[in-house]
Image (cartoon, rainbow, N blue to C red):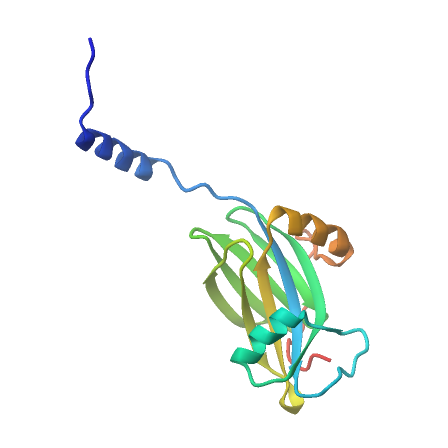
Length: 179
């Protein structure tokens, strides 16, 4: 017997599947960079690197500082629907939780105390920033990027020793006064 299903029934069937089958969650590969923003020509710390020119230009379109320096960079994997800490300095840790969306919740912890909590959309190749004021008219930013697999593999190898272990929480500090 050859029976055809009407387009209306197909629609109902597909709508039913959309509600029954949950969204597929996946681990996300994250890079977190601590950036110091200043009008000074050079960073007082010779270990700071000048930020990539493309990122610096994007910052200059939004913010008033002339120069941006990378203080630290770390990366790791946030488990599906899980949380992972990232140590960005001796005084600052961010905790990233993967949510539905694609969204992440980011908690900024300074000197062991919550400083900021935000939820943002995040997708591969895109970033967002969290930031605050520092002394002498400067500021700091944490740039959070979701890496694709190729970027993630290269970054993981380069930064493996710097990544915070999820089994051993780091000592945290205040994010301000980055030098």
